[in-house]
Image (cartoon, rainbow, N blue to C red):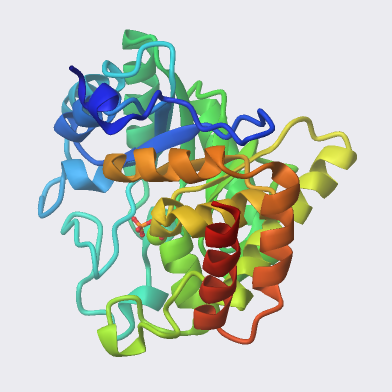
Length: 321
Ligand code: PEP
Ligand code: MG
């Protein structure tokens, strides 16, 4: 039997009322991609391309990048694969791109910001992604990490279009992106909430510091309100005629089944997580309808702390079960 069959996951995320919530996988390498496809993922919601090249002191050639991305896309024929451009920073070093001596790596030149510091790398990566798309049947969406302004999103959309990539998007990992999502989504077709960084920046609490775990918790009502703001921004952009705008979550939060219900209740359309999270999340989604998910989201955002938000929702879910 396949890994998917063993886990009881049929490859679909669907609420009790039939609402579809596509469940996608986070991957970093061709091996991850094969495992995610075997586990039944409906596509990839986050390909962390920097994982293909960690520690390199030379930029990988376009040829080498095409080969890596093609190997990953090949596991998902006909499926959506969200390819994130290099998210290098002093904390995730790609020596050809990053300055490891920054005093505040989390607030430094990382993600999309490296395009200013080392021009050309992003354009070549986009070219490689476009060539890999041509070589396979996957539906490629491309997104930039660590976007803080509408102008950055607009520039990225232009660069993606210049490379022939049709579905540009950005990550929402900063409060600035969450509160300007209505503007950002006039320029790009989708956003994906990176709740790991969004939590760190909303709570001003380093995600690497275990001693700050209480603050650094995606159940924090402030973080949930950032998600809500992003969804509202997408709805505004749609109401102004922008066309359908997908809001996904690709941070670890999506793999917490109770939190996944809250995210869906806040209006998130798709959830992406490491492959082992898919079956438990699918199971809890099957147990609630959209009205219940919305009520649980409303309950969570009213709580005074992350602990109380999680406890309130988990209590309700076990009452329902
Ligand atoms: C995130 O920040 O939530 C995210 C998905 O990106 P990464 O964990 O790679 O920073
Ligand atoms: Mg991130």
